[in-house]
Image (cartoon, rainbow, N blue to C red; front, side, top):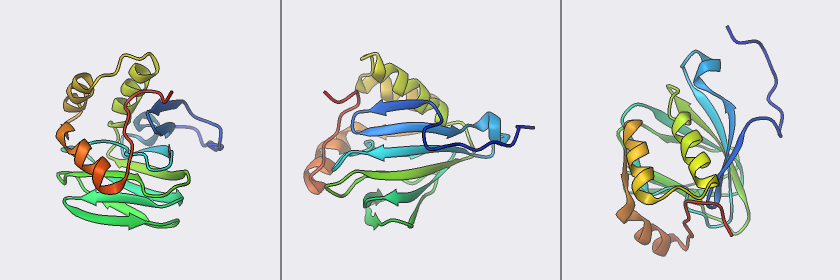
Length: 168
């Protein structure tokens, strides 16, 4: 059993994927595999990811700061501070910072496991070694399909930016 602990606002490994950050707060080993928890700070108008769908886990995005947009199987929704956006497994989805100021969400992933994907891609991005084909292949290892062709339409429709590596 994992020891009781407090995760402070500066605790946890940090990573960056373009305009979205990843702070690892609770992983599957700590939760007995039931869930993982990551924080995603997002730059203004940053698209988090291409449209994708998970075959193994559900995701819950709790909005802490800003305004977050999401495409949930073709339905566009917006979450404000205090809202929870539910992204069930098997549903195509993506999300973005829908505002001109930074946004921040807590992402609950259940069951745990997909946090390992974030760990790998943030490490690759930090070394400048992440490219679209590698990201898609890694996602597939974690039971996730990615539609890279969705990015231009999302960027245009919602006035967003998208980058997979560290921002210049």
